[in-house]
Length: 354
Image (cartoon, rainbow, N blue to C red):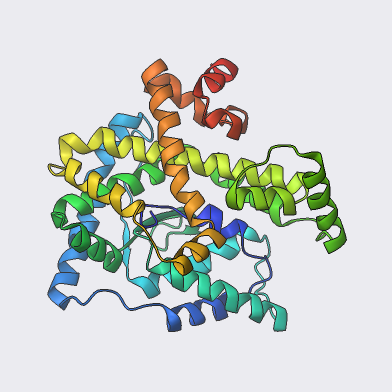
């Protein structure tokens, strides 16, 4: 949950090169990350305990609404600070984008690490929670770790003037939905890894080839996506852009489904959910200065915000039309996932798959 409640692993991984010195990236990120809000030790310990408990309490209602992961073990969440999130992300990223256990070395890997460290530092203050399907849980030895970033959750609940207990459970409902999505459908993590591999694999196109694609697109006059997605469409090879679209469609589904579940569960378990949702949506759309808008556009965060809106609308319409049980057909295989063209036309997914 990125200032929205985002799991940003997919988009971040698709924008970072494979050969990164991740240990250096983590050290850079920790060094330049902004400090969190000022809190007493007692307040932080209380928040950690409450978030740990809320992550467990959220599991039952999420399973009931989704019909997923029934009977599976309820793992404990890891409550971390910003430095802890950076360390976790720097471990997860290489597991996602590379099959090699050997760390990248050399000047190029250091430069890429510097870039990645700056990105991790920025995201460390925006992420409220994240389910990481690629990191192995040290206690269970199984893949999959739910991270909750306590200082960021405290900062947002203060800004929204939300009841801390309600807001913390609300955040956990979203993040636990991600955990349930992956634990009930283990093939998704492999599909995600393969898709990222398609994005990063192959020889780099020459500048001449990229310019040729841009020129041809401009001459053809064919409609293209707007914003950052349109840029990716122009600069990537057809194979890479197809992989990018698959990743975008998956991310839109995962986030939209989590937002749908959060709102379905919320009224019965979070007394002030309407106030929280209203304040949170206003925060998402708040005006930002030009530098913030530029940086968010460059790292794809504004596209991430759109994923919540488009994805939730898709899930809402399909569930309203066919019910949650038939909606869950979507988790069967890559072939039953929605195409990007179907996200805004849910009836076309229903016709194709159901």
